[in-house]
Amino acid sequence: MNRIQLYTTQKSLSRKILKFMPQRYSRHYYDLYRMAQTPVKDVAFSHIDLLKTVVDFKMKFYPRAWAKYPEAIPGTLKLIPPEYRFPALINDYEAMKDMLYGDIPSFNTIMESVHQLEKF
Image 1: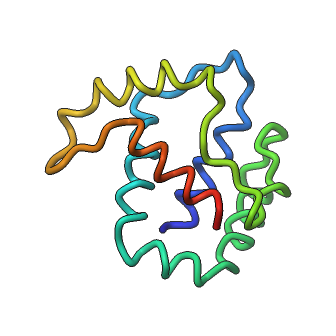
Image 2: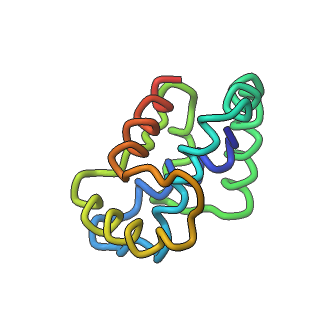
């Protein structure tokens, strides 16, 4: 699991309610789902120090008050989007399915997998 991918996803959940989700944003959740199915997840979770490095870098070069960088610590990362984001993300995922290949999971399956990642 790519810690940068996890952090980027977690950070976006701090966006203001009225801010629209970028197009193809559901791809981040799909990528997390796919990485969670591989040894990449275990390797990334074994390098917990990388999360602090990413947070420090973001705080220094990309400061965003809404990003809540100091809250990005293991065991507290929130990856599941708020409920009000689901309709836009589901529509986005459906629109980008043509870009995916192989066995394409449902959006619910992806969210179940991402929810499991929050427990690490």
